[in-house]
Image (cartoon, rainbow over all chains, first blue to last red; front, side):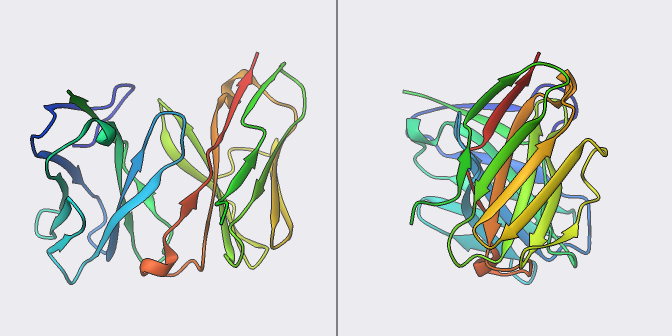
Length: 111
Length: 117
């Protein structure tokens, strides 16, 4: 989930396991959500998005789930690989269409 | 496409010096965003441009920061004078428009790591 302060929450998994990264968003009026992946020394990279009229969307090895009732977003990564190790950010967009980013979760995949 | 290009990748300067960060957005994109990332504050939007016009600069921390976009393929972020607390990674991102939808996904550059001593 999201963090407050200096340290990012960390999720450690074994290679091949499924990973679930959570995000709580703040604005009930947000209607578009994006997950980004940021590898060390690089900029955030788009992974998958979802609109508020959906509750699930699947990509290649990734699934995003949206629960508007509790303002919760999750990213599921199937068969996690060492290359998935990164910091994952959720972003919410509302009427301004300018994303508000969460603090991020660090995913560590152990071979 | 080369993606968003930023320069320099690393900048080390002394307090009081002027710093200029540069960005070339993806060709055809009409929105450009400058972000600052630190461990303390995460990813913060500083300013964004649409069609070369600054739309929202409310995230610019203070008057020492300024940004320009003289044409569709170039933008600068300037800090004058720089201070140690400005040390961060500065990202530039571009998108097709500020609206919602898949085509509006922001594509980030590799960032400039700024260290002010």
